[in-house]
Amino acid sequence: MKKVCLQCGKEFLPKDERQNRPAKYCSRACSHKAQKTKVTLVCRQCGREFQRKAYMKEWSKERGPFCNFECYGQWQKSHSLGEKNPNYV
Image (cartoon, rainbow, N blue to C red):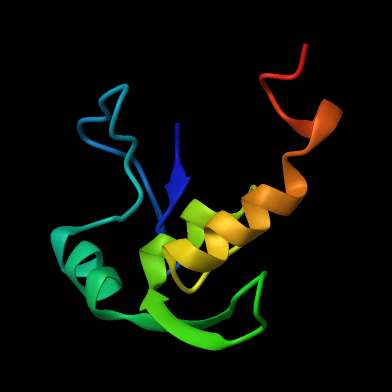
């Protein structure tokens, strides 16, 4: 199955795609560039802008980006109450 490189946008066929590490880049060069590329994100809790590596941007899609663990903890405290808490009975 063809994939699109997250760095250069080129379509490629993965040579060796493991279950726990799906191919994201067409080459090692693109993989290394992606690790050096920074993006500016806005903290979902405090609104502060901060820098992260571009590949880390994908990690924060579900809940949102946070500038540090303190902001993440504050957000989680206010958004995991009652029925929103996965341990709610």
